[in-house]
Image (cartoon, rainbow, N blue to C red; front, side, top):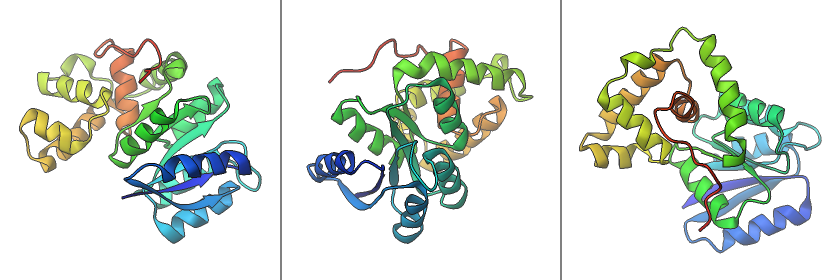
Length: 221
């Protein structure tokens, strides 16, 4: 059972999310917060798998709350769910460590998919924001000493391809007939080699360098 905290200052939107998640067999709502400070406290109290985080909230905004959660509670992953299709907000959320960034007009099945991906260590970004985030990642690459694109092995390229499909470590291990511990160690080495911090940045690296084809439009299921 995946445990989720909902953080949003709009009561009606929180209620809608709560009703949506109540209909999902493998998800339960561990708590609700109306501001970022409450969200951090709920994470400390309940250790949820995922926080669905709004950005614009009183007391402490969602970006600050995300940064605190990622720093202090690494087993809890944040998916930003916001109305802001804004370059600056998206960039700050990814820098803060969010595993996903979705807009509030995202279909409900995509929100559920994002929760499951984040809990498994994967990431989900609204495709409409892809160009924005890739421009930011290019800036990071230009200043990063770890840019070794030309030295990637076939296995490393395969890892990037599987990451871009949202595969978690167990699924990658099954696909490549490897031990899950081997996958974890190989991914850590790959992230260090290309100068990225996490799976989200690794996927953006692959998109930006033409190693994996990015999605051209939002998936509809």
